[in-house]
Length: 383
Ligand SMILES: Cc1ncc(COP(=O)(O)O)c(C=O)c1O
Image (cartoon, rainbow, N blue to C red; front, side, top):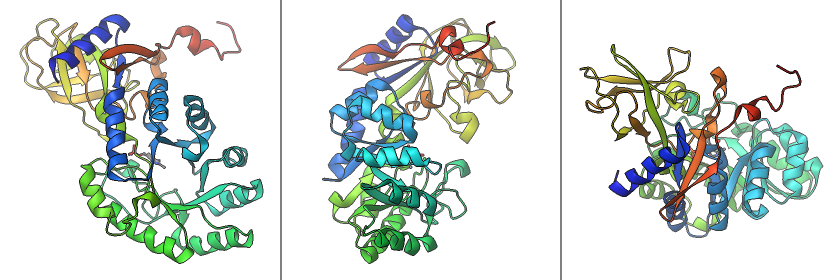
């Protein structure tokens, strides 16, 4: 990390305390712009679930990007950020009838993930109904992140597709889009080529113009384009739903070391309640020392553990942050912009962390730290 970034992160931790998420909006926009440059005319719909920071959503909406949303709350967040309906894509394997109808009436592209959801959409009236398929593609990633495998709950099965198209045709309609999302944190572009080939063939049979290749890619963009382009050269037909590739490397979780267990644990003031990915998916994140703390007893490989009452509350392993990473040290956990703040929880009475954003070199708070009052606001019993 360069000196000015380091100084900005230290400033942010000093002003708003730790644990603190910081997202660089300019970096996120540059990542989104890379998708747009690679796919002229395509709809680049940022997956809100990756990081719904309000300042990030607002900036992406201002820059003309679209949004992929799940559920009525994400739909409202995208609308509040200023997204126009023609740039909103709605997914959700458990989407209820009322939400589907509202999204459809509002003008979003709404993907049916089951025949039953399709029926609900057809009953709801006019609008753009897409079909999200289960493409039976098992990409190499953590099993919890593999959504395209045949056995997963997501999408209309390939052998149900003729019936789906038939139901639309009976209502005098056609699919507005065919799509799939094969998973997350997929570093190999190959499965996206396979998906493009499959969807292009199916779209040709049913005369569907728009093809939605979902999100999930975590490798270099040119490899993805090389894999997809032979099957779908007309980039303006495409919808993509990237989340992680837009925000992961644009975000940091700042945390301070609170205690040291000489047997090898640095206990931080952030843990699985702030960043659950290491525990949930075995994800690894780089950790850097921003400000020194007390001296550390000799020890080779430290484990960065959180304060939560769970033995699995571990953020990183085998760390060597030097001899001054003891109590008080300020650490930056990198690659934390996606599925970090978004998955924070209140377990162990934790108040969800504040979120700051960097824009044009300036850092500001975009979401304050949760308070005890926020936490108890829903309680119907005193005390
Ligand atoms: C339907 C859908 N689209 C897009 C994404 C974004 O995936 P990623 O953040 O890995 O790009 C997800 C994430 O799980 C998803 O479920």
